[in-house]
Image (tube, rainbow, N blue to C red):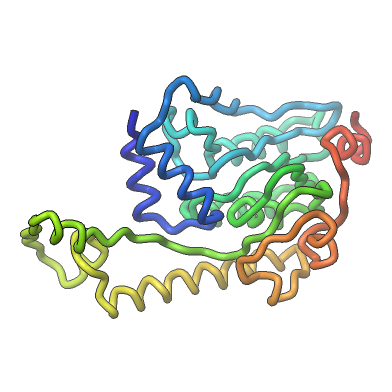
Length: 261
């Protein structure tokens, strides 16, 4: 089964995600075995005492459909809904983001981080797997970031990957005749090489969002600029590099620290 919507998003959207993970997601979207489908994540938090545990797992995106969620993706809208419910619940005193994600799309992400900063209840982010790119952007908006010793965090960067099919078409004796109106309408069409002007515009947009990413990270954190160039860090390295507050090796230990086991 092919997920055409996801393939289109991978091919055209701006992403903050580990490149190898996006490649794996792309290959899965082309030929997906339904027997490997994951149960879509629930749209409600898990309550542990007075702590609301919000799962942030898999690739992240905005307005995902049921097929996207079968791929193990998490919707920014669902995370926001869980934050709102936790804020309104008088039995909840603390929010815990349990993250295991290599990142996701830029679309929808700044709106969610703004919502996180407006929360009146304290937020802790914890990963015992991965909190990279867009997932780290989310984690950085928490009051504290906790990581396990072997977890991976960081990858503060943005990119877009466009597939140039022009040579492939030429080698197979195919030529695309495109009639368009609007000077920039076909700038990013896959059947033609990317012009220098179009590439410069894309680069400017990528730089703009990378700058936004770095600025938002340091609203609540204090990460040196040299640690925000797309590299990743493991547990103790992340703490040394100011990407995390401390090392805690399990979710149960985090809940104990928060006073709710």
